[in-house]
Length: 96
Image (cartoon, rainbow, N blue to C red; front, side, top):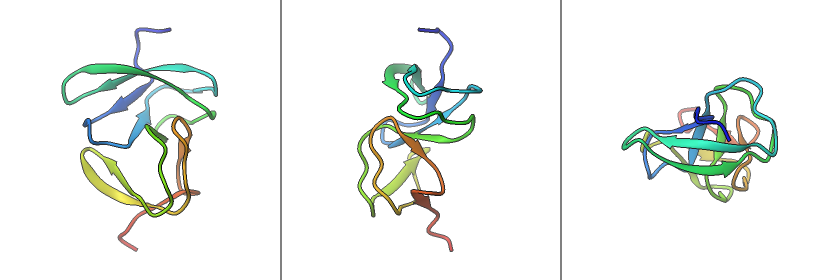
């Protein structure tokens, strides 16, 4: 495993993290860093995920709120399992 983080999480309350490397492949054991306190953990990516996209940090049910930066960023319109890609197919903003 690399010492370079592949996923950044801003707060311990977040349920999604952001991919910060190009060409993240399914099966990669990621080094995940929580920027709030510089702690880290490991998580396996279960999908290929582009840089800048999100990954679920736990199993998330349809209807749950997405938390990033410790803030509500939207509503899950589909269930997502831990380690899977979070994007427009399963997450929508609450603004419109």
